[in-house]
Length: 179
Image 1 (cartoon, helix red, strand yellow):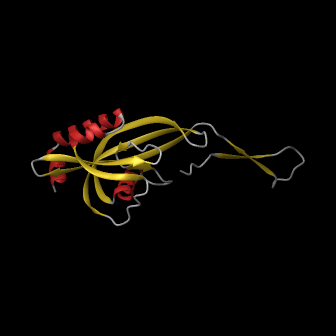
Image 2 (image 1 turned 45 degrees about the vertical axis):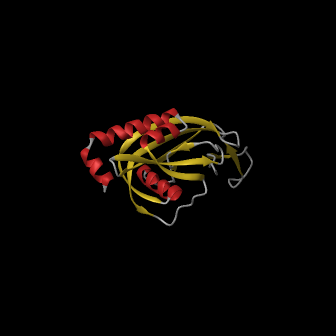
Image 3 (image 1 turned 60 degrees about the vertical axis):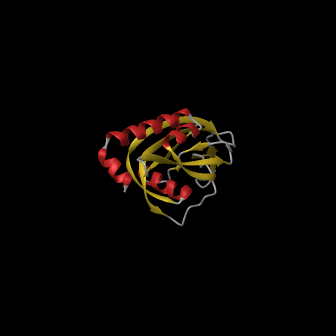
């Protein structure tokens, strides 16, 4: 991942010209915003399936929701839609915010990153041919109970439970997901 390091330009000591600058790089904590989808579909028998991605380079045993980093100037909802499409090839429509998770990790260059992830209940509206498919080894539709067991992190299991409650409590969401 190419993290951008914040930079501050400051003038140097007296006697130097205005064109002489020193770049000071701060390696303090960075923050990043990410978004993704808890993508649900209804299958015969009235069961919900959930789209998961698995096996990242950093975490070979990882299973989670398709998600990724917000680009400069991009609405966070657009990030969720783009990342799901890029990672899975599935085009989605968002229904509601299912949950927000926060965590801190250390990047390979030693920088500490505080990350906030917004996950939206979503449903598939089509397929795309521009899936990058390089971040994960697997993309799978799983029954919601199996998805709950397969998710690596407790925070993702909590978001999945919240998403399913939102869908179960809203007949319109059920109708949209059913197609």
